[in-house]
Length: 356
Length: 278
Image (cartoon, rainbow over all chains, first blue to last red):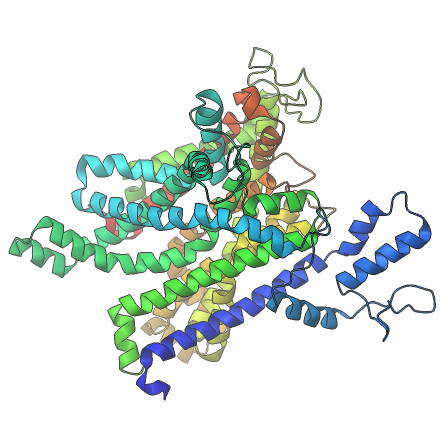
């Protein structure tokens, strides 16, 4: 049946591949935090057991052990204990199965630092900020960067000589350096924009004009710091792609025919865009990582900030919840780009239709 | 030789190499000129630059010049180590898979692609967060090298696959060379310039990764690094106190190192790939 629907088959094939990647990411996310000797419960207990008597400390420990499903339970729901009175540990394999089940249900456990709060709640509050900052920045930066790169390759001359070093510089300034610089110059020295945070203390995050005004004012600096770096990186890539395209026969022929410059640029852009799109998929992980760190510099209330506070407080469930979510988002974005390339690239399309 | 001549003619290459060598010289010879002591308090907190402390002091009253030289040394060390590991791992996997083809290549390639899309910073965060004690500079470099090899494997694989069917490779195969012999003697030499470019980019990536980790508070416990200086400046309010000397020089240094590596890379690309030349 799928033979008659090559596009569908392509999408399903990609989806399968990304699902496997997602499972590997889940495994990595599960295993890495458990590499160390300590388990999260010991960490919490070290913090909360102070000033508690033995029996209530024990009760608390049991509650935590159950919550993180680290121990075997007997039929009545109590923690199973061995002869020495130590709780019987669930095997790593069983823990993994529990973890898989919980993650696929969207249950990421509860945070240690902000204890009764669920990790999923914290993430739900942070995610819109991260998406609002990163999605427009990356899409917009990609478009502008590619436009500039194509123009520089086509015009060469002064424009190129000016743009190229600037783009190189912009792409080699680490995201956090650039962010700190913006905070210092425009936030603290000139006081043009607020230096840290996502909105004024006076307003609440809700759907109101006052909130949006305040939030967009705070948006400027973090946006700029990520945007310029993305533009720089993309412009450099596009420039060399276009210089390559310029030497191809079709561009020379079009020039000989006297076709309008703008039209030639458009043809070139279309051809050079595809590798750039694939490049975007590859660079996405790095870009998102850089943007997460930018959030920390600006104390922007998104996932990056959540990761930072989680790391500072050894909040394992929150760290791995955030990392899992970021990974999933990157995978999803990659998948979309992959499918998009499949639709846009005539070579991929042709390969599909001839059944290769 | 002709290649070298072309390189020396490229102003970008000269600028990049010059800048990079300059930072290496600071790192190597710095201790001869300034007394590098990044652990003794030399004055009050956030003293502005003066004759005694060329670049002022940090929040602990440590001499910034000392800190910068020590930080630059660690950052270059991490970059070199992480870059070497990532390049060799990627080269091995890419060359072997690209030459062998078939099932082994499919498996290696699938594995590479798998880890390519999982953001390496995330893996770095998870790993570093689970290693509580003993997060030394060398260990961090090792971890970075082991997480960033993926794209070099992919790039090298494509190059190796294109060389697989060359005549001299077929001849070597007929003459009974083993796989490793062919890969190292008959394929790798063709890719040396390419591998060198990969190494340079991986080095820049290693330096940036370490700085990013340090910004998160997951930096090395045993040494100063440029990222750690920036992190300390950020959390100790150097920005709001207007103590620019506590972060600006570190920013300039790290950007100079990365920038110089990037322009070396693009200028090499221009020389190795004549199409990019005017």
